[in-house]
Length: 228
Image 1 (spheres, helix red, strand yellow):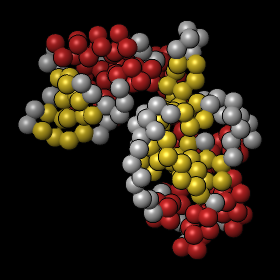
Image 2 (cartoon, rainbow, N blue to C red; image 1 turned 180 degrees about the horizontal axis):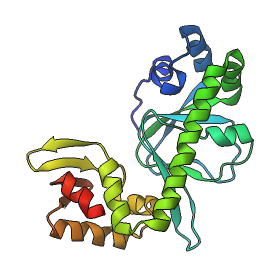
Image 3 (cartoon, rainbow, N blue to C red; image 1 turned 180 degrees about the vertical axis):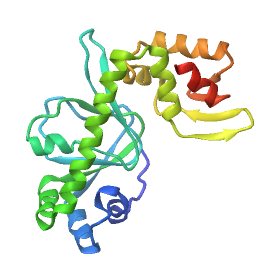
């Protein structure tokens, strides 16, 4: 994979979690931060491994997943640039409950536990931000459980598409799926076959067009109404 240079201090300073820290604190934090380059499909850590800090994605994508009862895997989250993961288990001092695998060539920053604890001891604001971030993630997991329990596969897929960033084109909103369709299906608790059928149905109804991982939503409002 390419050896892209990363400004670790600049990366840390631009993360919402660290924006209240001054230059000296960022420099100290960077001293406890290590670059870890992960090739596509490479495992960063396995379920059951002990945590020694937490991670931030500099570029690329990380898939968090665990084995499902039918022998496949359940994708819990897809982590993109600027997002962090692993904070909760670092504080709990318990093994990782999921595995982490790179979906593309990825660079993560691993921030060691002592560096984080040193920042926390200097003031409460950073700790509050970490708690807020973990609370947002917990809220997202609760929303996932609610969606799996109360919403149909069609509703989950439409909701997912409408949440994705896109670019306006003459044909509508162009959306790039954040991962391959099998990973997106697992993230939404669907089989790949069900996801394909849903996209085919929506395409037949002229609500969207599918071109590999690129989806063009022709009328977002119509698609939202179709969600019910």
